[in-house]
Image (cartoon, rainbow, N blue to C red):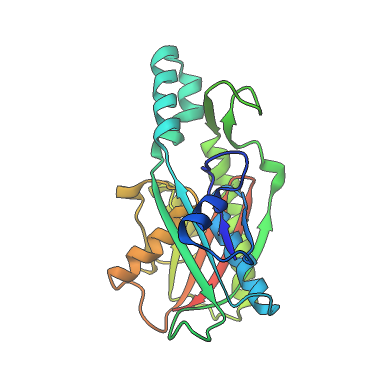
Length: 262
């Protein structure tokens, strides 16, 4: 199974996963498809692969994404220079925090992958009544002949996203039977300093348990959480035996949080 979970993609069809699978030489019996769910697409893909493994349908799968902010950032800057409108600035300034990158996650049934990290479980919650808070796409709809635009109600995303995050984090602790001192570490979707401070205070997690990359990588959409986890391991922040929370919140609003035994 190969799943592409990025926001950015090659075309509306075929699935971008097909391009990747062809390049990797994936076997013809593999399931190959895209999923899309804003910044938590990779986490959704991880759940789909894990479920397929648990059902005995597959032994291994890979979930990946590649995000590029160049076009939308350049377009946003051009629009701001032309309009010089404060309301437009408020709606689009969050776009300028975007970053570019790629990441992949391999999940297996453990029979041939050695001593790897173990996915413990997770929980999902949504607040889809807030689906208009952050929108990215062609300003004329699909099919699109005009340039893309991205509008974000930053305050609304922060306030409602934190409320959803608190609910989901508490549910994650209950689901995994974690004590109050768990998780040992967390890796979050990367947005910015204000969002980080607000959510950590809300769920009562000290800064020392969190690892960030937004200061130098920005917000890389679906890639952010996974690439941050990889860097955290490289820098020995994540250690063997840690109970780690992957905390994902994306536009929609959708929230998906996973527990990993590192």
